[in-house]
View (cartoon, rainbow, N blue to C red):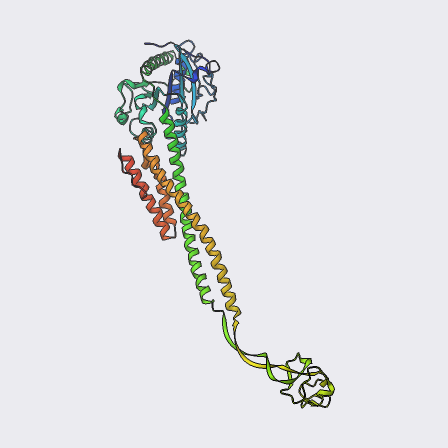
Length: 509
């Protein structure tokens, strides 16, 4: 059945196209002719064509190329995301773009996606996430069209990587919605070995060939060659017939849910986050553990210093003057604070007040002055309390040891506070690391259920390599062991999930 397609401009159909009848996503290796295929379908849907009289005059381009550096037809409200259309070494499509068409009262949404195996390899993961996110935003997916350059003669590393990425990037639920277009060839001229697609298990009815090279012409002067133009017209007509067949098959295909695209994107984001977080958190954890060991060593040294200096006093015998009450009275000089005994056990009558007339008769008197203290006798009196010299043992502080004890005591308190904080941080980081490891296993298991072909070993290779590198540069034996052990477990985990359908639950135990 042939389809007569017309296009309705985006500004007129945006509302209705929120619920399309057909959703087609084009996916392929960079340079596989994906964007060219979309331009072909844009002309097919808009009933535009190449012919001998008008050549390219009526042809529509939604994605720029070397022949049409600017689009001349808008089928969406987005700007295209192509970069230098003259540079064939780089993927042209940078972001997903959506083009809306109408045909036989059917609304068709076409999704263009960034190329796999870009020469800018760091973008592959981001591009996969973009594809998963874009497809998860449409209500369903009818066809995923994989474009392959049919002129490839062998399974190069590039194509092998692309096919591996494709298998590991598509949920199992959409494998019944896969279509393959070999570009730049016919079925007779295709060099690519169809057996290389065996893991996709494609139906022969869903494998197509398109010699879509109309936009590859470098010199428009060639259009003066009538024989060449007739050949180009025939090539276009053959492509229209092929697109007719493709649309027939797509209309016979049941749409697939896109929920698993969203689920897969979320889990891949989690996996990417865990890959980076695990190394950073484990490194932080090991740094804290090392700091704890250093602080514990400092605490031991400070405790030893405190113990060694805790006896910071020593016994010393000194002479002390104590006041004793005697059964007799004695003559004391008031000028010496009543601690100068000038005549013990005086024979004069008791006189508690200073009195020259009385004390000049004391045995201590030498005229009007005292022979012992040289003070005047008018400064003397009698007292039953007299100073007595005695030997006394005291504890004398050794200042150097006391200072060392105080310093060690302060250090012990400060280090204990530091240890409490470090221990809290260590426990919190350990919980985080354990949670990352646990969720890593959960995420991988969930991804395996969504996409049985997901290559976890390849996905986690960079993480494993980074852990090995951390182990190599670590100076601490424990850190080396921790990084290597984690790398071993992740490698075993990735190997098990990559090679088996079901695996055990015991990892990071």
